[in-house]
Length: 269
Image 1 (cartoon, rainbow, N blue to C red):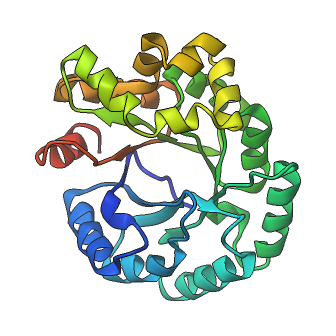
Image 2: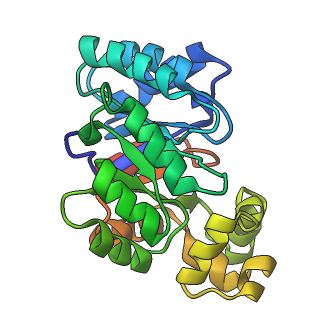
Image 3: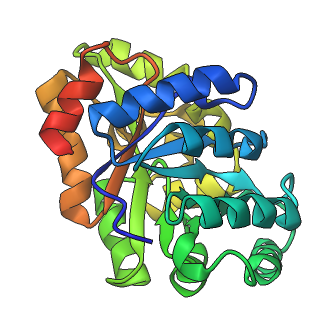
């Protein structure tokens, strides 16, 4: 896998329900100059729209952020990757994660074993937060994809994965200059749900947040995990992740002013 480039992007249009909307948005974002498109995963299987997005674009990297292995059979992923590797080599990078059972490392290793004959280690990404997952990304993937971490934790992750494994970091961005309104937006998003997910709770604790911070979504936690403000402030906040060792920051377009995507590419791309 080539270098991912500094600025990746996700959009609500990349959901699995409407491939036409996904294609239209993908073409638009490629023309703006983003480095990579990330099709959101979660509990959805967006694998079926990947070929349409890759076929409609010309050069941009297309990845999943993240395909849940509990819902996407390895054979299905291998089939889609194999077809695109033949027709559009280097354009599709499967992002893998979502092992929520009692033995996630064993589940992921078994999944990698299944796709190894078709999807090479150098062409895949692993969702990774903690040290064990980051080491697994180092050993069995080309990149790690953590979300909701601080720039300081990026530096720690870089130490674990080493210089040869890329880091694509999902960063929550809020275009709001009023601190209270910015915090309200964050607390109204996915953070309340993720603050109850064991993997994220452990990650927040590793970054120095206590149980009161996590359960109460304290100002300290919200501010540390979010980049918010005017355009210049947001650019500086995203650059802090790159300076700390991230190869790419991945932003969601939800709620951003229409002019921001092009301006962020100009500043960081």
